[in-house]
Image 1 (cartoon, one colour):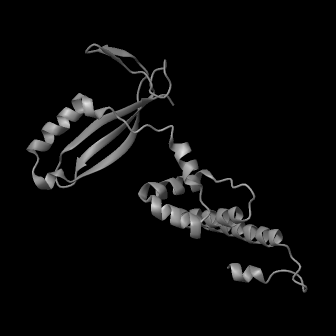
Image 2 (tube, rainbow, N blue to C red):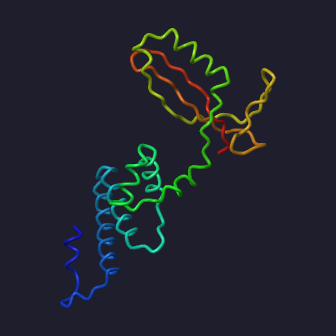
Length: 194
């Protein structure tokens, strides 16, 4: 596709690089509109949008990434930092690792499961499982709850982790599901204010 556009221009070939980039982007955007109108698979549309953004990023003086590109970049980085760095340095225009780390710094990874009843329950449960039942899936979910503060067992619960002094409206949870048995366990993770 890019070789096709390299021949665009007048007889002298005096078309600027920016003009050629604008032509490529305009044609890609037209193609995106056609694929949306013809109800192509969403995957095709998202790939075309990614390709269009990559062409624009190549010639920007200051990179501005879309939310979709940031999400793709973060997923790649989490899977393998070395592969991410290789892709970033050779093939794709992706955010710097320090930028991704700064964006993700608002997330905390300590769930407090090491010192509470959930961890104790899981330790006891794993002792009675057969070896084949110990292969599990971990599913993350967000559950909406009624905002309320309760006092139970000597502690107050219901406040949001990300907004001190306010009641939580959602709870981020994870479910542990055994792949080869019916064992399931839903555990609360964080209470958030949305």
